[in-house]
Image (cartoon, rainbow, N blue to C red; front, side):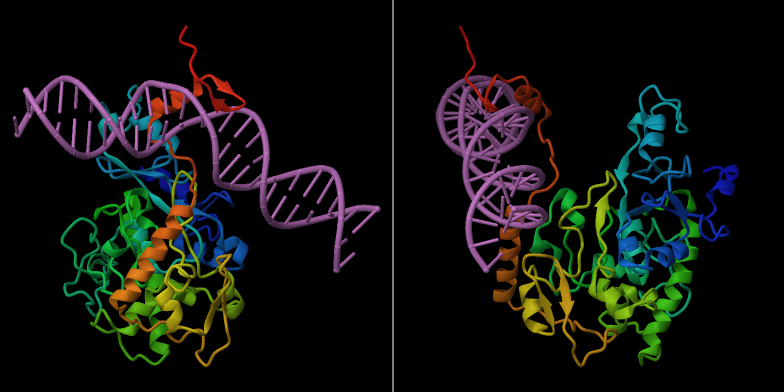
Length: 371
DNA sequence: GTCGCCTGTTGTGGTTGCGCTCGGG
DNA sequence: CCCCGAGCGCAACCACAACAGGCGA
């Protein structure tokens, strides 16, 4: 985006910070802080789907990231820039630019999870190095090595991604319990406002980590397996930054759930939903281990049964699965996958065309009259 | 290793009918 | 509480071109 565009990129809520997100339901541009504030007020707001703001028009949800121009683009702007005839900022050959879809989210994701959406390796904290090196502001492309980078790519052995076999567009559908979603690739999708994003995320991250310290931990740990770090990045705990309103109630409903969706607007049924996967029937072994959490099998609702563990205490100590449990979990997951239905996806356009032109009798295909 | 042939499998859309839920009597 | 009708959602059905994989030349 050009500098002239920055003026119209102010957050609609605070009017001060640079807006980085777009909420379709509210038709509003928001900075990260206001987004969290606005969408944590009640469970209905939390269901609003938000996406990064288009770098070109500053008015719509970005659905694609152009790797050549490093721009986040909404569908209209992508069409303008990359259609064959389009003048486009990239000049000629725009149609050949490599683009990839950008994920949005609903709910109230933690900073770690937002980083997952952006595909950012590192927040650029200068403080206690969690991953080893200091990881500069530019963390995106390079060798990075910030803590989130480690989390993204060296997932703990609790449930490996390979175990769960999640192909293609479902790739963000199911993840190990404490691992933020993997980016499509390691290049960040921050577009033209990466520095501002990281700045705002750093501000957001501070209260989260402080909260952990208040819980009794005295300082950040270098250990990736430390409960502090794991919990900070646990989806179930992402309400840490916005739970001051109705802690229990909000937790009970879906405030802690957030879903990753592709920006064509459809929320994948398998979207990352901690209440259904991490603790739910799709993770039966985990369920067995945490009898304090009850489920209604026919829905995705999760009701926490009063227990001696306060909400903020770590409800899910990481327990490795034995092979039998693992196989059982995988087979149940696969079985459930089979019965799921998603939005219509045409694999072969030629077959669609053929089917549409077919002769039908009461909706059924009829034999062709070859005479 | 490559090519062509053969055979079995897959995927496509509009309509229908079944099963379920809900509201009224 | 029970029954009935309306409304809704979803799976099954169909034919056949396209696809995938195996096999031999």
